[in-house]
Image (tube, rainbow over all chains, first blue to last red; front, side, top):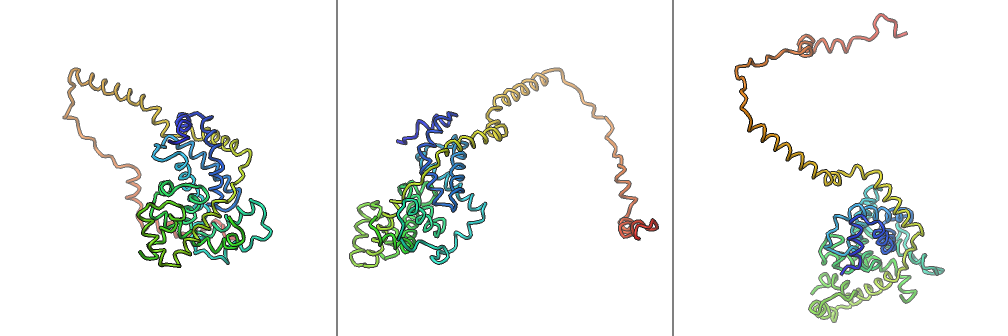
Length: 184
Length: 157
């Protein structure tokens, strides 16, 4: 049962208060997702706003095949892809990950704040090609299960398993100082 | 099972999402493959770290800005939302179509009108443009284009 169902139905009928409540419920996840998918904090927050505007405008097309949360993540993925295309960053993101080029996290010394740790993770994620980055973000940062991710990205579950495996393998050396330095 | 086919199962195993059948197959492979055991340990470690990534602080005015953008979008584009207008005007269009159909039906049930079939066919009158095209040859146009402009007027000083 989709916990958002009643709100979604009300919002689809034009109830702005209901939609505002949906924004309140999902804003942290969507801002976090946008932060993980594109560079630049300001751009990410702007994109997150755009995601909700798109959601509001296309809410009538939501058929309930998935949860609203999964559908909203799909809207965000599409918005991020459009953002990349518009900004001409897609080719750069498709380059093979290189620790030297992307200036990955190489130490945890002096890193005490939660935001700094988040920043390191985002920098590591930025080294991944988009398909791996989307899959690992939806799984390990957003907490979607494989079926939800497959629905959000419109690919088979086997592909999701493979992408998540490869993403973690690529992140492993980048996060090695974190993994070895502290117990999660 | 090979290491290549085991790889996707390692991710699902780290997430605790393997069914019994695939888990048994993977366990049999892991029993004899140190590399895949190490890869599974890496999967678990990275997953644990990423899962503990702190949430992003959302700006206090985020919802206000979303609402403002929705207001703006509705204001600017609401009147140009063709799909919405199509839906709104569909009943009116149906009524007009019905009225037109009824009107045609009433007209066709009246006295038959005769159409004069002996009317003279319209004759084609050449337009002035066609006459001009006939009188101005391609050579004349070329000559006009190549002729020095302002000749004799002292434009080039």
